Structure formats: C-alpha cells, structure tokens
Length: 389
Image (cartoon, rainbow, N blue to C red; front, side):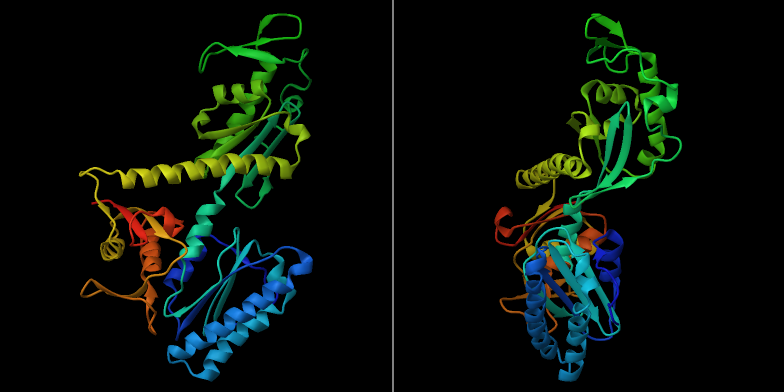
C-alpha cells in the first residue's frame, strides 16, 4: 500500500469516479488539509497531517476497528508522508484516501479546511469543488511571428504541440513577411470576405491576403482540437489578428475571452495569469446566474430546498443543478429501501455526510454540482437543487 516514490495525483473526473465506486474491506479514511508551498514552512504540512491522523485513529476505533488495524492504516499514511516526493507535487491543498490495501494522495488547486472522515465510503465533496475550480481552458497566443497553443486551468498552463497542420508563423505559410505592417482596421461585417485596415500613411486598404491566408491556416489546423475538447478558448494577440481569427474560424463561438497585446512580449506565467482571470470571472458569473435561477424559480421549474428531498432526488438521478455547502456536514444515514433519512447533530459510527452523498450521486449522474459556502445557500438545509422532473 506504500505511496512512496509517487507524486500526488491531480484531481480529475476519473479519480473521483474511482474513489466513488471503491468498496473497501473495512473502514475507509478521507483526509483533507491546506498546505504551504514555501520551502521553509513545509514542516507545517507534516504537522497538520500528523494531527489529522490522530483524529482519524480515534474515528476508526469508533467504527469498530481494532487499535492494531487502525494503527496500520494511519501509519501507512504517516510513513508515506516521509517521502519527499509525496509533497513535491502538492498544490494549495492536499487529500489522502486510504483503506486496507489502497491509497491515493491528491494535489488540490485551492486551500481546503482540515477534515478527517472515517466511514464506509470516501468523502468527496471537496474533490468535486476542486475539479470545478480547475476550470480547464485552451489558450491560443497568436501573432504573425509566433503561434502558441496551451492547455490550462486555475493552476497552470502547459504548452501543447499543435502538429504540423498548424503553421508557427506567417513565413511558414507565404515564405516572407508582408510588405507593410498593418496597425488598425475596421471591419466590413461579420464573415465579410475582406477586412479593411488603416496603415500608417496609406489610408484605407484591403487586408493583406497573406495575413488572411496565415490566419486561415492556423484556424483550419486547430479544428481537430476544438472538435474533441470542448473547453473554452481564450484568444491572445493584437486586435486585428484576433478579429481576423474570429472572422475566419468556424469555431469562433468557442472564444470566450481575449487578451490584448503583442503575445511575443508575454511569458507563460503572464499569459496564464491573464487567461485565468478571464476564465475565473466567467465561472463565477455562471455560478451566480445558476443560483439566481434556482432562488427565483417559477412554479414550472421544480426546486427542492429540503435535505431529504435533495438526497432522494440525487439517488434517483433527478438533480440537474445542485448547490451544496462546502463548510458544514449534515451527519446521518439514508435508508435506500425506506427512502428516508435520519439526521444527527453529532455523527455516530457508520454515519455519512448527507450533503456529501447528495453531491456525489448528483455529480455521478450528470448533474452540475457547485460546492459553495453555506452562507451563500438560501435556507437552513445546506443544499438547494434544481430538478429535472
């Protein structure tokens, strides 16, 4: 079960599905902790984990696990944490999932509150939140002398080789630079055959054919990426190049944000910061809009604000959109045969966080799940769900 020599995995849909379907031989342990990236403070990461493991040990014993078996489970995590590689790839948060003969440790892109949960299923609500936070996107940095494609998220961007079908510069297409540099333009209308530019001294003139040829070649070569991956696209470049790309690209509607400027002067870190600001604002806006729709729904849109109804709807696959509290747990049990829930102020051995169960089941069955502060959710249930029927 040793995790030695392995870097922390990144949160992904496949990982959540694996953990959600895992059935262990005995109790399972889920651990979450915020982490520091500063080298001189990394000892704090190990101290936090050590304290969590003490709490987890007591919870495993309360589930009926022998002290020997509980110690074996927590010691395996403690021993793995001694490996420097375990901490090398962590982000602002960290999670460990373990059971007899099983361990996964996961890097999280944002801080999480310290939490240990012992039960017979993994606690995954913070992972769903982390996955949504990553906000995958494409970044296309486009200029006449440089074409760069990146796959990015809230943590970083990584260069992607677009292949031989995508030219890297205008000279790759026409074999020379254009005769004149075009600084400004005005458009003749969406999808018009000609863009009209203003040069330094020549007044209005038609777009240089070689520039349009180059941008079309870039657009055509990128279509294979857009067809198989539907993440939004952030387009970076000077104004006339960005405008022309949107004119000629059949996937122009995929461009969800733009970065103005000469991309040749921007580093990867600068491009990532600018792109993520755009994507994060869009994610926040969509989240706020979805919550507003649920809060002000009419009689024709079924909405549930009662926890028992939300858990039952999640079990049935009827949840379309779910807002669930990130910073509280509602302990209890759901009886599948009776379709009833029992809630408790303090967890008893074998209880689960009912909010976590609703979030995981809704997510697995195609619902959109937003994990937000409890204060953002109307009512006292810690959940509000828009239902499919």
